Length: 124
Image (tube, rainbow, N blue to C red; front, top):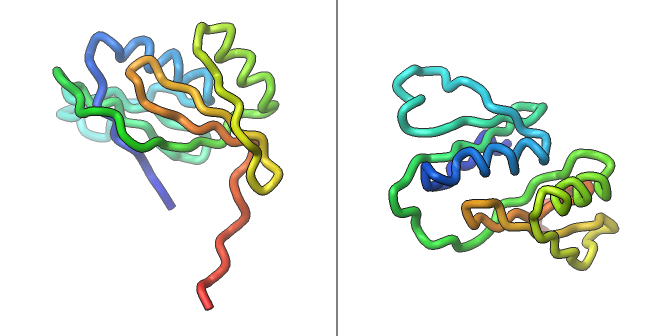
């Protein structure tokens, strides 16, 4: 089970990143150790998955993406993102699930899924 993802984030982008992740069901939480407060802002979704916005003066180039199951209803989440000024790019559904891509304010590519894929089958 994935616990958290660390995303290098310019300090100037943290507030906008928090607002973005809030639209996806995350909320700010306190790190378990006070020494971590100076290094990152932590967000957590129901169920415990976390995003750590790691303060960076020059974040690395954005490659790859992370995927989250969007809060229900999926279409309302996409509408909230669009209303907040984010460009949502609908993608081809997989396993019957609607999907879309959106960039966070700091430039991270986020895949939004209406529901997760079914569990993988063991290799033969």
